[in-house]
Length: 185
Length: 360
Image (cartoon, rainbow over all chains, first blue to last red; front, side, top):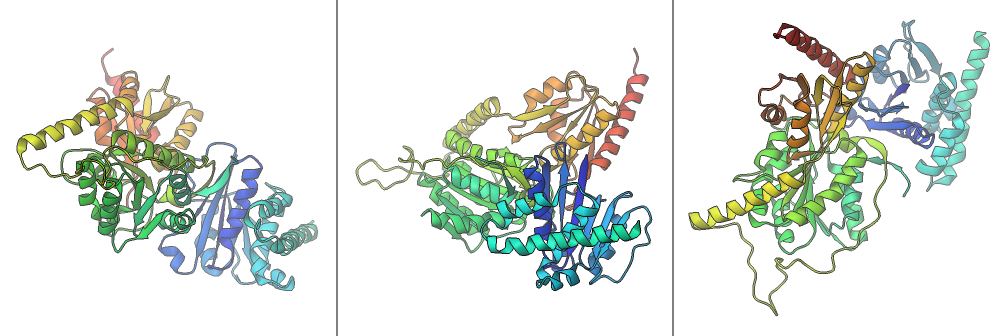
């Protein structure tokens, strides 16, 4: 089983961080994992992105053409990656900044007002964790707790004061998706 | 020590540090800049030398000078910078001083781009500068190998008093993967008996790469060739996957090798008898192991992120015994396993046609 997550948005929206949080959580869960950022000319205009691959086998390529999951934070990234999500895959996107909708019926769509939800929590910088919480609730390949632990043990090990906000943001994204799922039933 | 999620460039830098690198001279270039950045932070912390030179030409000549004093020394760059370093690299080889160079390859020729490529294979394996020699070339395919081969590079450089190049590419440099760093090694306590350390209380030593007479230069060349022969005998390294009953052998190194590995796994799932041979040393090319496999297979497919460079070494080993096909992407395009699988299937089909057509 292999999952490929692309996280894409503006520089500063925490897309690389979100991909790394996922990568650390997967590593601690004993999975094979790779993380690779876009570092080419594309990061100089509009979209910064990274790909996190999580697998039960040795990972050959950290680069993928058709990711199985996409976390999309802004319009240029939506335009670039919405068509690339693999059939059967999942697209979570930030409706606070993206007015388009996808016409694709072969993928699962998770529209989340992530920046608005993060702003209500008092910190728009938590957009990334809201969207990640939403993604992992719609597509539970790892428990949210694994991401929280990874933040505590790795990415925020030297900044524990930021843990609580990140945890709340993950929970907020998760709660939004649970409500959406409940309404759909 | 626990496994950590490490970026290739940072892992190489930290491994060099733990291998006991005492002096680094370099100039920034994508996609290797994090390597230089990490050492800019760490070397002064440890009281070692980090120097950002005014150019790659200056950097390599600083490496030359530092290495002449028996100081454990390295530099790193990418294609355009490695090109600028050619003269200095040849002088280092011509002076028999150990040095480690990391080439995080990017798309070329020319300024090209900053994306992953293996376009420097000829440049690093054939001569790395003018004259008659080859550096030792190590090709990591993962962050863990990038660490292990960086440690090994310093050992080999000092053992053979030779230039060692770690040839990675933008993908290995930029990606993060779980890997384990080795413990910190102690620094050398005394300098080798050839090093220039000041001749206060001993006869003077001279390090040079100039030989005015043809006879003296030939004697030196014979010595270099004898050393290269020893290196070819001792240092060939490679890994294999599912080669025992393979009919088609895929050959790839570094990033292309790991991508080919996924394609070979997928081909096996489809019932194709395909194996993988991944050279870990590009010089010496692992011809002994490859030759053994080639004697029992029906065809080869070489996969590279270039127009076909290592394929020449595979063809030399195959010596016409089996057809050698090629699949490559260029200019920074990284092939995905699916397209390598398609190339495998195509090669496999054509091989079956060949063997059907051959007389019993």
